Image 1 (tube, rainbow, N blue to C red):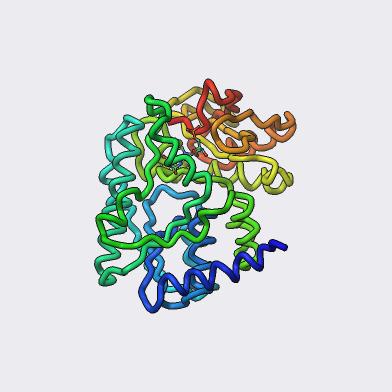
Image 2: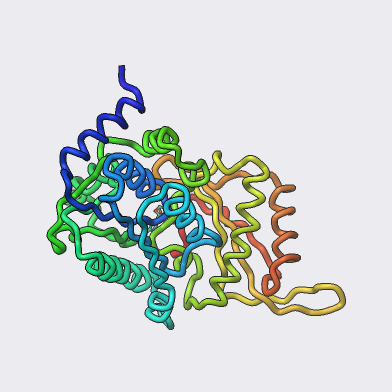
Length: 319
Ligand code: XMP
């Protein structure tokens, strides 16, 4: 009979055979897929694996720390942690167009990754957390829709350019199976059960120009929202939940004074694959509690809205 433990053991053997005494590098993002791929490969070949974690400065509060603590600290995996926030934020200065944001971020990820890989002296193998649906989707792309709604960046073309062979131990699995495998490998629930997070990160949750100040503001709002979702036991019932910082200032009243501060939107959806999505029907008391915490605890925000648009016609992210 098929078990996850059996699959793990089989994959470990397969990785050892494929890699021999070669070196593998793996881009770690903090997401489920790359985390599970990295841990599995490390269980197979130990220090022959080196992970590269590029911090683009557009992650959620605490996420970069958690990646480093978990993979280097707890799992003892060789990990290059490159803080590239200056580079990313400088390149994004003044950029307002969503597609240019995405392309800029995608290009920089590849450039920084290549740079760090070169510093290590290269490798024969590149690990990727490609899943079965990714395999299918890239095949169907040829006959797919001709209109690009959003250009998702990935490291396509990288292995050929860098002359590396791919190690893709998850390519037969669906997302829920990857999560089960991650649990089998002892990866903490906070990573294995994590909602999807887009490569362009918080940059596409701040419509218009982004800067450090706005990012910090959004991180505070987002952290309160997610904390309340977790405390209410709702995290696992939701596909994705996040806050958006709106480029709008509105008038409010606080104590005896007038405020003129920014507005934010909260979003939460259910979905099975991200292609369509329904708004999560929070009860009103919950939304009320979150809104009052945000306006009371985050200086600079005086208005909170809840996005009730499904997909289609909306998309999940705002940009
Ligand atoms: P949309 O906004 O298109 O999002 O409804 C569908 C799913 O894809 C994620 N998303 C991205 N993921 N790079 C990614 O890795 C991207 O550029 C990107 N854009 C959207 C989004 O978070 C949702 O899960």
